[in-house]
Length: 181
Image (tube, rainbow, N blue to C red):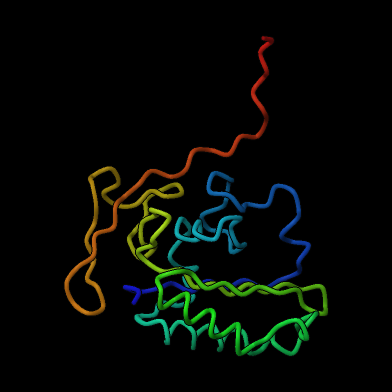
């Protein structure tokens, strides 16, 4: 059982995702407030809390939210025959129940693209802070940054500790010069 989860969604023209200089990495200018999905799904946690579209206390609630968001797009999916919807739903429920993320994305017939994601929190792989914590300037910064960890109340009582970590190192924009051997 997950402690809680956060849902994120984006839809738009697929071409928007591939335009150069789009803020899709944590160190890109404008990344924190950009509604565009990040390259790595757990980097949603670095974005402003206003982009959290849903917070669920159970796997079933998270799946219901995914179904609700997905419903208007289902008839517009470009290749619907290749998708086994009952199997996709069951796989998402198994993932969420096991503390893993669920992620649906598809091209649409009009050149669009839709992404629906649910990320478990605290995350079992990425050590990003929960997006519900207030943030200071910059991706990954949060109130009390550098002071160990934070504790939040878990849905079934008690508390869970979420370590506070520094944002990832900047992505290299060019290769370092090679040295002759």
